[in-house]
Structure formats: structure tokens, C-alpha cells
Length: 212
Image 1 (tube, rainbow, N blue to C red):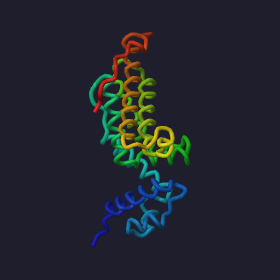
Image 2: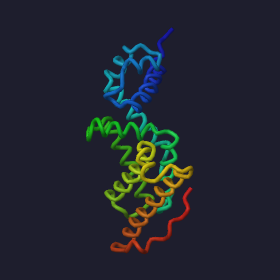
Image 3: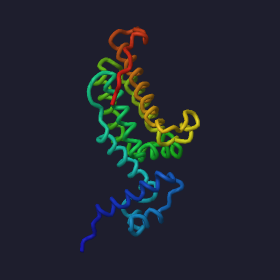
Image 4: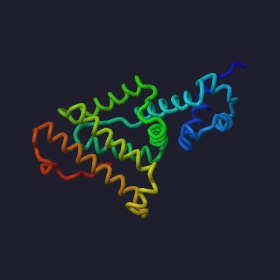
């Protein structure tokens, strides 16, 4: 019977994702990953080289998946606010990407793996933001996106801080989501106003709409 290489890789990636999300790169253990996957640990070295190579593969896979699952639709500040709301919801349901990115930042700093693909993914998001807010610069589009990512990624990763600052009442999650959507709408509106009329005042921005 032929060995199912792709299935084995998939099992290892799934087990490694859970391990890295919980313990980071330094704390993760090859033995635990192999045991969870039900695969001989030698397969990890065969397919991924070492633990670092496996972490790299997990990061690239998680972020590539996220690109497809949460696209930017429409035009105007409402489109960017809607994107932020959907990204917030996605990360509440699955905190894989935020956790991996926080571990990557803590343990690797500015070192980036899968650079060509990740640069292409980021460029695609920037292009989508410019399409939603015609006339804004690439730098402003990038700043808006990193603001959205920071707001949405921090929600599932910093629950203790959130509770300390804003409380833990039953409606807290929806209030946090509304605050993220409102912040993004106001920021996107300011950029759109500036692009339409350089020097325009933020006081000219319309009231924040209800964004689902």
C-alpha cells in the first residue's frame, strides 16, 4: 500500500498548528506534534526539515487561507468597516492566525518566512483597499490595513487586558466589535475625504452607519 504523503503532511500541519498556537516556536515539541498527528516524528524531518521549517509551513498556510476566507468587498468607508467586522468575527471563531502572528513577532521580530507569497498577499490587500477608497495612497492604505489587523488580532489574544480595561459583561464582545467597526469607519472616512479634497477637515465626516 502506497504511503499517502499529502495526508501525512496535512495531519502534521494540523497538529503543529495547535501546538504552535499554544506554545509558540520555542515551547513546541516535535514529539508532541508527531504523537498528536499519529505519525512517526521522522516524517517531520523528512517533509519539513526541522521544527523551524514546520513552523514556517504552518504560518504560510494559515495566512494564505485567511486571504481567501475574508476578502474586501465593495467601495467606500462602509466597505472597510464591513471588512473589519468580518475579520473580527473570523478571529473570534478561529484565533489561529492572530496567535501565530503574535508568536512570530515575539520570537522572530522582523524576520519573515514565505516572503514572496506573503508580500504578494499583502500587496493584494493594499490594492483592494485602494479600490475601496479610490485616490488614497498606498502608504495610507497600508496604514489602514495594519490598524484593522492590529485591532482584530488583539481581541482574541489579549482577553485579560480587555477585561481589565473594559469589563467582562455579557455584551462585551459585541461592544468591542462595534468599537472596532466604528474606529475603522472613521479612519477610512478621513482618508476618503482627504483623497477627495486635500486638506478637508475630519469634522466633515458623516455619522457612523450600522455595519453588519
